[in-house]
Image (cartoon, rainbow, N blue to C red):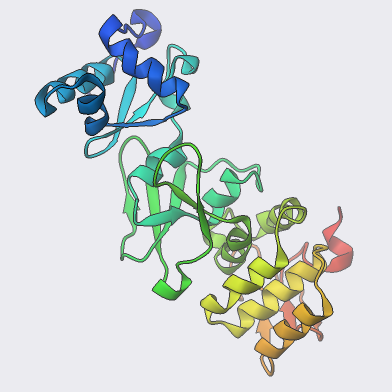
Length: 282
């Protein structure tokens, strides 16, 4: 095994010169997590070459982590002597994926809808991509169509970093539980989202999935987990899915079982435990 040459900041500390401390302190005061080469050039009125030397020194001493070309994530003083495990994976993933948005289980984690902590960050993108390996974060990319590229918001921690809204997240985790911690996590996600999610927003995004079965499934889930559907909203959902029958989850998927029941209202085969009204609890 090759020797580990990574710096041990607990032993050597994180030295910070008087000159370099100025931009670090200013960034912390402004609650900024991302610094760029341009920031250094403008802040210190220096050349590009000298700016890069300063940034390299801050990387070496544990104050910055590179997250993309010319982009570095600040590891502030409050992260202590071993800063890297505290790096915000969502900020890093967003900086490396400015053409996408944090989605699926990662969005559920970001919004506090799940207790799961995912090792990688899942990003929805219009590009064809799969996985990005390597520091400072592992990213799983999921392709979505241009029409379905909706329902996201900016986060406050860094510029140009976007995350799926809570409403979009509910649709995504139901559509692709394999990217969201699995079927068994969905009841907790829906229960936690109930006080915060707006049904009209869910219905606004729903047509972009182009799936009658998705309409039935979200209608059933909203009703079963206590979301307040108006008679007009319920009528809309029934109209959109008219004449279609479906499974709540793809037959044979992890988490499904053979003990199923049929819900005639939503024309759904309920093929997983924990999703029938009297079983869901809480």
